[in-house]
Image (tube, rainbow, N blue to C red; front, side, top):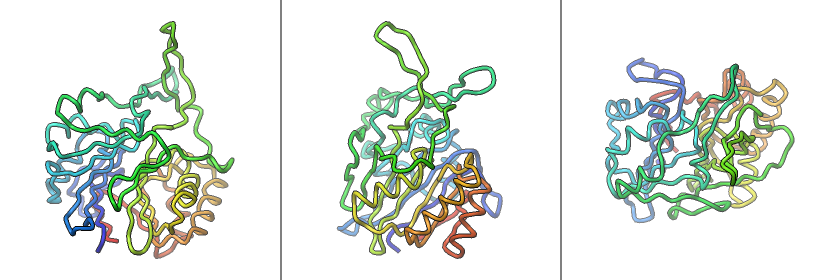
Length: 287
């Protein structure tokens, strides 16, 4: 085993039904570095902080994390941060996209509803935690981890819902809502002997765009994809074509959840067969 990923919280319950679950995602990552020392990282925090209770039940410590990755500024991925902050040790490095603090909203009946994060940069500095904001296409975190960012839009299939916006304030102080291009979104890549493991939060930029961009940058085979693929709102045509494009990448494990949606999961299961994993709360993946 090179990497172990435990799903601390997700939309679906664990099989024994003993853990909390919610609309959100939080993944606990354990791996060895080149010196043989254990590296522990948390990728996203769900929406409420209930993942912390699950971590306790699963025996996963949060006070000695090396890294906290926040994939983007939506409440179901960063909502648990305020509850987590008092538990973190000072060695934890927090990694986000440069645009993480945009005020995000979603257009619903009756107007725009806030669906962003409630913490600020000051919350990290007050606890002497290092905040690293990725600004370019990629940033190497250590010898095995790379964060990818600012994904090229390579197809016309993976569109972003016009209901997703963020609030912008101009020089005159006027506030307007503009379409969210999800420039804050980050994806984690982990090197293994079998290839690159890619961990995504929601894949708002499009899972095919993301994987093709990573593949073009690294020249590495992608052996596993874990996390959300945001096919929940996808048309049958988008879901079908996405599954076909993913299959062409020769991915050995497709472990999806959260925003993939029932139709997306069913199609991916059909296409990937034994290589498909429904990654519910409490699931453990060893690579």
